[in-house]
Length: 77
Image (cartoon, rainbow, N blue to C red; front, top):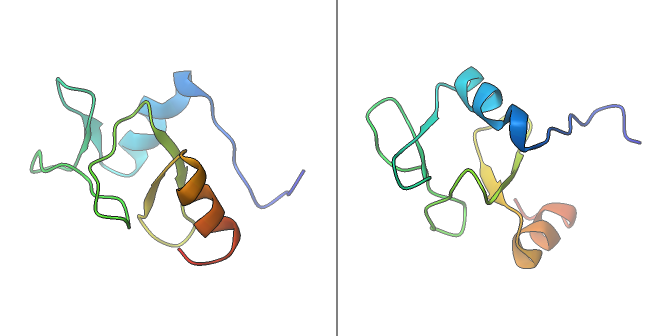
């Protein structure tokens, strides 16, 4: 296992989002302090359910779909 990665399960997502000053709206989308929905690098709104990665050194919220994960693994995000 890569010692530079932190892996969290669904029960920890609210805590992790709080560290980044984010929360979840009534429809399950991740929002910032102004209640604006967070947008992925592909331009989509992201739900807590779909959140897979918050990229190191940024606030790029990445969904767990195959295309997004492939881009991350290739360093495109």
